[in-house]
Length: 249
Image (cartoon, rainbow, N blue to C red):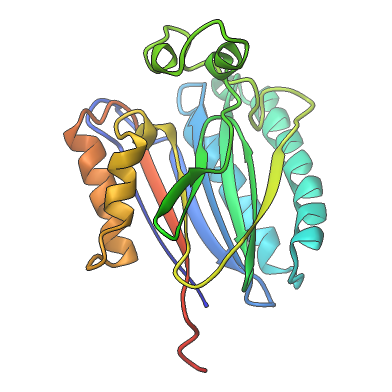
């Protein structure tokens, strides 16, 4: 049985929240969780992120697939279509020129989950006490790290930290990364925007996820509160997906 919770905050510095998050279920009771971090334009960022979550979520409701292979085929079509829609909308309205959005998502089945992303919003898993990053940032600084030109520590404060190499609505071609993970009882998937990971490091996030007496919603709120307490320099959005024991058994 898949349970979810999410929370979002404007942070302590930004004037608007350009993140958007949603959770949807299809006709086969499969869960789709998606987090977007909008960028560009005057209010273009929140338009792009809202469009992506709303369109994908609405279309997901009408599906009935129940495995990762079919889900990925569906997603490939949907992400390309949404990319085209955002590009056309930005062209049509001058105040939306340059808008785009990162996206990270999980489609959770009974014993597995499909993860996909574009940009630097991330997915993590927490299973058997182990916290693992599932996605690799599509960003300039991550490319520099991979080439050995800067260290991971230098990447955190690099002046070009915000340059994204993949997103929805930025280019006519996209190259989403997909992965499938196994899910067992009490495993957690965390989807988040960089507002969380710029404020909290992995051990700090893991400590909150490991706290046994907190509900999923409480964990989301605590992650947000801690990120705000330690700076809150950006919008912060988190979504937790948990595989729990089916109480109807």
